[in-house]
Picture: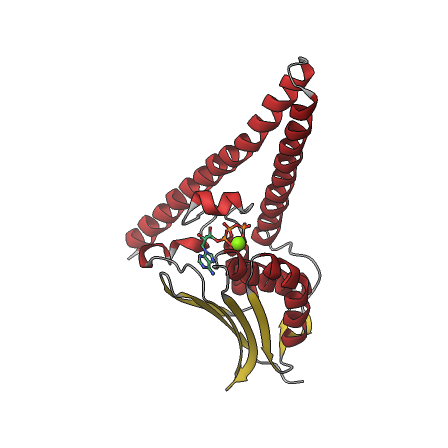
Length: 242
Ligand code: ATP
Ligand code: MG
């Protein structure tokens, strides 16, 4: 049995070393693309090889890619904060329904732009968590439901008590996720359709952050999806009394 324990520990060490390597390689790759664009366009302008119209377009590209780098770096820093357990202020009692309402109103303009109708239902329910964590969780799930939707589609956010749990449901009528990808979308940088995600500014870190948050607040997450029909994500939190 001791030999078995040692063997298993060794396997874990090898596995986590490999994951760290993969992560570093992914980060480098993700940083390289926008920096290549920024470097290329600025060099053209520096050499006087851009017409005034080019300058406008190049500056736009440089700005867009710089913004992308900032988002990426923010997400990476946040993940590393969550990794080290250094995740900000202490836990407090939070009205999840109220937080969801704030999130929905914040994203309503975005939904309108995508021609997606966004709704919220439920009643006040309390969970014990970090405020920023809850905001990140709600934002990422709702943002995905809007982003991976179709024009004319819907996103329904619901918060309710069920037995001794508080249940958050985010349900969309979007493009859905093929079965073979369902387990992997919580991995860092994993995107089903790289081009669609990138085009919309995605880094593939949103759900990795969600997964971390869910683990730290003792919640569980489950997913049901049908390609072409939509996706439903549920998060179950332990209920706390008022
Ligand atoms: P970001 O870091 O900006 O959130 P992202 O949205 O690409 O980027 P995740 O939120 O981690 O990254 O999602 C990972 C992938 O899972 C997405 O690229 C998308 O392919 C898929 N996905 C997530 N949510 C949905 C959804 N509601 N419907 C369909 N596909 C989804
Ligand atoms: Mg996302």
